[in-house]
Length: 252
Image 1 (spheres, rainbow, N blue to C red):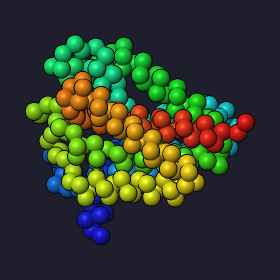
Image 2 (image 1 turned 60 degrees about the horizontal axis):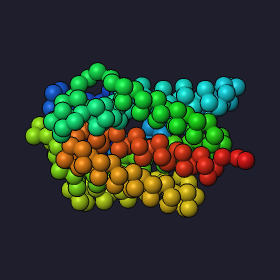
Image 3 (image 1 turned 120 degrees about the horizontal axis):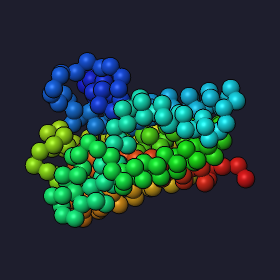
Image 4 (image 1 turned 60 degrees about the vertical axis):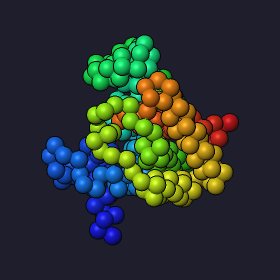
């Protein structure tokens, strides 16, 4: 149990801006094993964002505005970790001509045209989808979307080669098969506990499909994974799931 709790703390420290004790300037020894707790932390993030969204709706804030404000709070909570990855891969894949130039652009901290556009599209899609979901389903939908979006990352990290000889992804290391399987199983269990079995199944399949597409794209564009690729994959899966659930749950 101590190992599971240690993994939870490490996952919280990595995926959020919440103050958690960890060694300065070093990757925690249990970081790779802590991948199994990514969907649990994702579910907690989703629950917090959903409760804020419902709270704003309850005091009369219009649904779309409540969704936008809740998503903004989500970015503050996570430090926009995955959004940054999505913008970087859009800039790199869209603006670079060679593998080396794409990787160089992805390391540039400045936001380019492609990155700005993908963030606008992603934010608009998530905001409008969340606004369309009835209040009773907002929290469960966000819990499932955040858990599944992070639950596919260990499997991607396990199966993709590294695109660079250095960088956060390589320094952190790859999870083993058991860790990836636990993460996937936990994310599916969370989705099944939050949604109807059919919606949970469709959402899980969509998360898996998003991970496969992003893996294929990363291999084609830069030859493998970086931290940005994994972050971008989470955002693609999260956005796709929210749009799917809005289409299935929105009242006529």
